Length: 344
Ligand code: 5GP
Ligand code: MN
Image 1 (cartoon, rainbow, N blue to C red):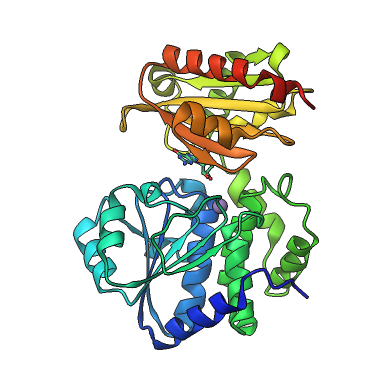
Image 2: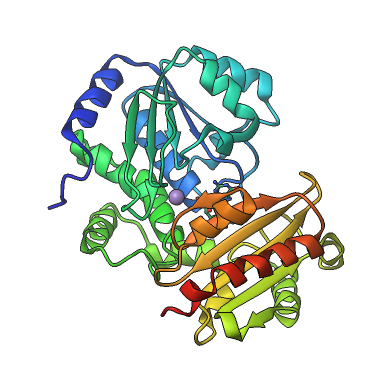
């Protein structure tokens, strides 16, 4: 049995909306990851099975390694079909906002969602949820939004309606947001849920391979290059990876190729904080990804130095300037946080 994580009042409130709604729109964050896609498509399959009219809208494209996910072909990319998506958003009875805590995280979709008269529900696990939804199901202690979707469906009494496809999506989100159950994954209930998903026929080993072992040769070569230029700050228990535009061209970089790189330095003994800085030509900024192990608060550092945020052990931000300047800010940040970095 699962603990009742989601408040009964939220379950009741959502059930009331759900019973009356027909048109439901699901939205998630920019650069959708496994959990954004897993939670959105998991909920999509469930709502579809209840004969609702459901549309999943993402701000921009999702990576290739998630294209196998059942339902991914139905996902509408906002930046490609803005007009149609705006219409769906404005005419929806309910908008489900999944896996983000702030309208900023859905980029150019924010206005349409904010201005829609639809009822809005937030289902998320990031700290500090914003005030843009009437129902707020926010649980930072839960390791993925996909897990929350499983809990929500079960608490509404529909476990038996979870299909094989729905279970595959939920599992994918739970797996990716915990790095294949290697962090944020000590809760016993995660494994109870996995066993329930297995009862729906999912092949968890196959899902792992589809997500983690389908990379291109150029990604592996890029990884080799990025690791060669890695800087390890032994006096700070920290490490830094960078990727410039030039390097991206040199290695035929495509979106998603550097996914997960930021975690690699954490496999070095004593390194408890890792950063990955990538030039983003499209947005003319440097995207910052931060990871830590243990109690080091990379979200605090992200907020203070990179106008970002996120979770204690996985956060990110943005930097407007050159790579050299971004590296200098990173070095300033680890200097300031040196006591916490060494307090292990
Ligand atoms: P990633 O490194 O995978 O891009 O992001 C990890 C986590 O950091 C995300 O799940 C999100 O919580 C947070 N994050 C990433 N980028 C940003 C950002 O620009 N602003 C904020 N507030 N959080 C971010
Ligand atoms: Mn997530």
